[in-house]
Image (tube, rainbow, N blue to C red; front, side, top):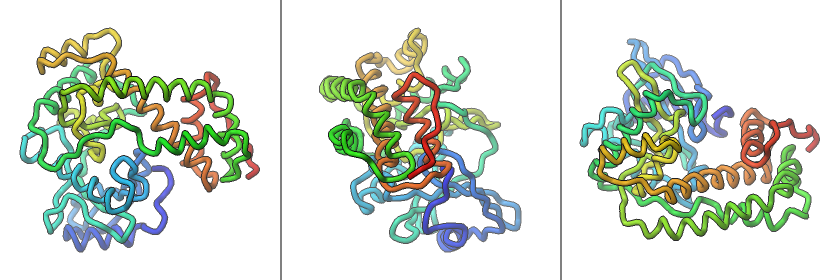
Length: 334
C-alpha cells in the first residue's frame, strides 16, 4: 500500500512485536508494497530481520462484513498457511511466525491486526502476468502440489459472489447524479457512464457463469491470488506469499492467473493432478477478478477521498479496466 494506515504506525507496531513476539525492534522501515496490507521491515539490535504486516479489518470485505467476521476469517486464512507450511511440508508457502500465544495473527486495537513473517531476500513481479516460461511452469507445479494437499482444518469456502456487489449496482443506478466524494468522483462517474453497457454485460456474464461453476463438485485448498506480484523470487526458489485469500474453491480460482491460452500449462497441471481444467471456470474467475477491482476502485473514488498516491493508482487501474485509451489525470478541483 502506498499510503500509510490511519491511526497506527511505528510505535504501535513496535509495541505489538515486543508484547506478542518478544521482538525488540531497533528499526522499523515502512515498505510501500503490495495492494491489500501495510508492511514494515523490522530489525533488532542483534541483527535479526522480520517482515511485519498490518491488516485493516475495515478493508477485508472478502473475509467478513464486520471487524469480528474479518478477524475470524483472517485468523483462519493465516492458520491455513501455517498448516500447509509447517504441517503439510509445502516449503514454498510463506507462513506467519506464531506469536507467543501460538496465534498466527494478533489484534492491535479494534481495527488492525499484526502478523510477523520471516524476512526473505528476493523480489516479486511488477505486474500480475510477469512470468518467464520457466517460472510459469514452476508456479503450475506449486499449485498442483497445493491443490493435492489435504485442506487445512479451519479453511473457509470461497464465496462465488464478489464482495460489495451492491456498490457497483448502486453506482450504475446513480450515473445521472453528480458525485462529490473527492477529486476523482466526477471523472469516475463519467468513465462509468461511457462504459455502463460494458459493465452491465460483464455482470450478466458473471451471473451466468456463476451458476455453472457453483455446480462443480471439485473443491481444493486455493491461494486465491497466485499472480506474479505474490511470487517471491528468493535465493531458495519461488515462494508464494500473501495468504489472506486462502479458501476452498475450484482449482481454476488459482489457475486462471497462471495458465496461458496455448494449453501447455493446463496439460501440465492435469498430468500432475489427474484433474482436467474447466475453461468456463477460468473465464468465471477472470471476470470475477475484474468486477471485484472495478467495484473496489469505483467505490473508493465515489466515496469521500483525497488525492493521494493510492487514489491516483486506483484511478489509473480503473481506466485500464474500462478504457482502451491510456490513463489520464483527473481534474484537480474537488
